[in-house]
Length: 70
Image 1 (cartoon, rainbow, N blue to C red):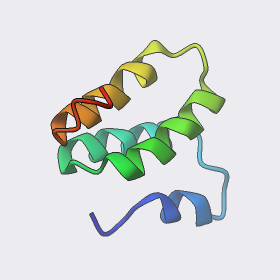
Image 2: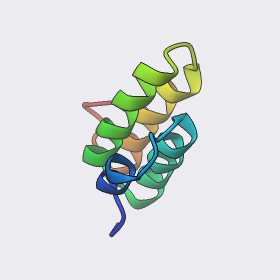
Image 3: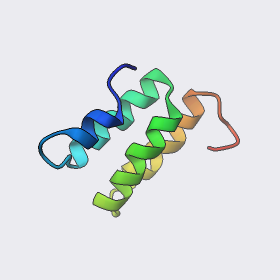
Image 4: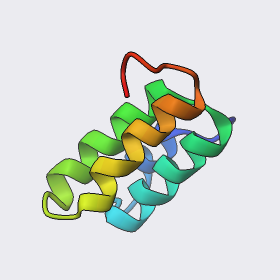
């Protein structure tokens, strides 16, 4: 995945939950758990009551075969 969290962190506007959520979803598709951790951390801070964010991170770990982290 060429575009990653640096894009979201260097945008001229503050990245909102939608941006971090899209990145987290892309991490599941592309099996990038390390970047997913960064996106999830932002989402947990921005949207602490959105249960979907907490479910998506283990799904990324599972898609990458990191069952111990699930």
